[in-house]
Length: 184
Image 1 (tube, rainbow, N blue to C red):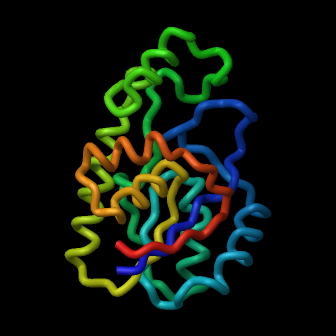
Image 2 (cartoon, one colour):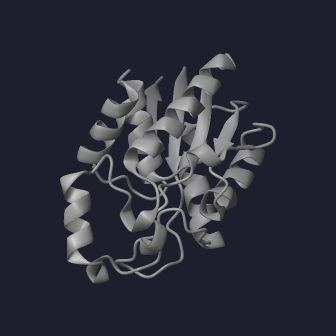
């Protein structure tokens, strides 16, 4: 199955803040710009899946209409990692000891008491298993940078623990509105 992954537009939030699964808005202008950029490179009529967070919804809805993709299929398993009490805190203000604990166990540590990377890998793996069972030849997914890295790890046919490890240590930059295509 061919997956076309799109990172949401830049959310409306200050620089340097941890926002994981916080439900943040995006501007109409940014959504229009991303829509104009991605629509020409995406297949029409392919099913479109999205994180239910509004920074994805605001792109997914007009994109589905433009591509005649039918209704958007929202799936909470596509949400970004939940950072617990770290959500919307400045990265520079987080306790150094907690950052060090996370660095020592990037897969198992639960930043701010939220999710750990292993849990994210489990939900992405479950989403992919369900998606593959639907028999689509291709699909479009509007989601988040962390989710995209996890989907890339899943496409390598790694075990769930190895998916989590791979995504955690390969945190390459993914631009807002960027499209990545991979074979699942």
